[in-house]
Length: 152
Image 1 (cartoon, rainbow, N blue to C red):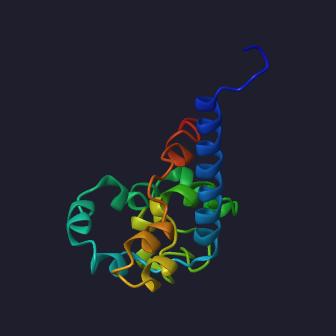
Image 2: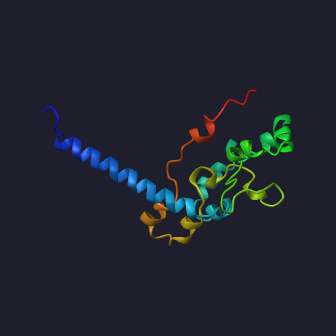
Image 3: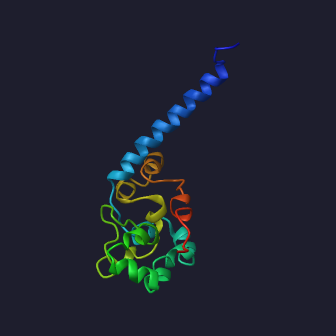
């Protein structure tokens, strides 16, 4: 058996490769999309929107914007360190610019976790399999939640 790959292992390896390639293609589609805001999501995802309105992510920008730390970083031109996790789409196509220009994105909205929604919106609602390919269905929470300690 040494040096040989069993049929089960071949199938598992093939499945992993397919999943990785599928994820890469789905991610590339998401990377080319633009942010459209939560109101676009609300029309089809009513229950999720109602639940989210009470979620702490909805206040992610509010909790930092008046802190001394954020004010100092903003004065130093380094507010992006905070904004990449505390708003929706900072630095992305159609994403958060500032509170005055894009107030609807001054929170971690649907697209903050699931990626920009323009491609998702563009697919006909009865093409469920295609719609699922255009949105990050299992976001990586650790991207923001494990990025650093808020101390120091």
